[in-house]
Length: 418
Image (cartoon, rainbow, N blue to C red; front, side):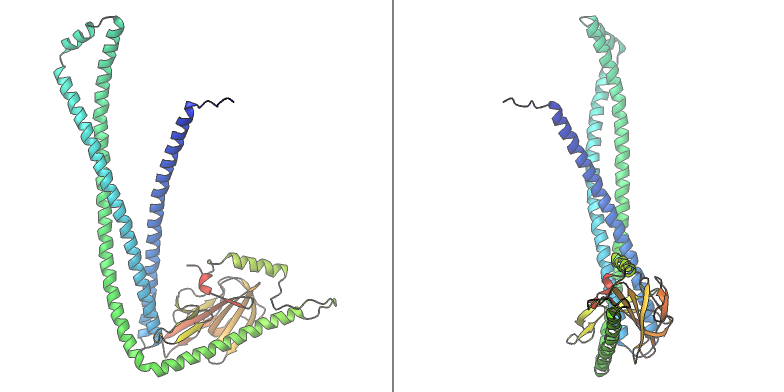
């Protein structure tokens, strides 16, 4: 059996592939660093906007001299955003530290290369000085044994002169490259100083906010009995909302199971029946998970989905079937997606609710004062559906949002755009 001959060109191919991989990896890493820095910058701006808006809500709350639980909730949200902002600044500083180290290493390498070039150039100049006599160069050429050797010696002297010129140009280029790296290093150091200063300022603000929180908690603890009544009222209101939602869903299911004019019996189902059009709408809603617009123009989530400890009394758990969104006085609720109003209900003590069907999905908007839509209305994305109740006693305006898939509750925060 003959062995396949190994081609020498294969080694060159492997080396070329390795170099391409190395270069592309380097470019990819540099791009990743650039992307992550841009992401951190965007996140920092968003967090600052959240803090500024939370300040607006706090100032609105403080107009009422009586401390409220909503003030504590908003303050907690502000502290959380501030802590996240500080963490983001620290991540930026870590990236800059890495870049500064890289620049320092590049500068050391370039300085070493420049020193070597200068040393070689100095030797060349010394040799040229010793052999600068034209007579000596002619003797060197004419002392050749034959014409070919004379020609080679003449070419050598020409190439040597050209090499000296290129060496001088290389030194100039390397010096310029070194100067550029030093300038880049100084820029990175200046950026770091700005970030460190910003971090100090944010930590100072955070300390003040935590002190303010301690004062608010201390005052609110004196109102424990009132807060417990408020918790109980909210629980009962939530139960009423759930019953209203379930009644509307059940009505949809019952209507779908009614005998049809054609006399054909339909199998009973505990799910919402979808037409081809509503199935398409349902698929469209599902594909927009994490991209739905907020149900208010501006707002912050002041109570998350699910069961969690009460913000003031950690020994008491509260359950939320959706999310509560704090917003400005006078704010309007708007639809998170196109659909059809499947129900409007009035909940005594808890305002009005609007339920919009998006195929198999439902979005629920509660704590509304005036409603601008009615059952059967076709709704477009971001269409205003009502204004949100403002509680004068606690200086708060809160929209309650729920998202359902059939009869299953979902976390709205997973569906809303960041």
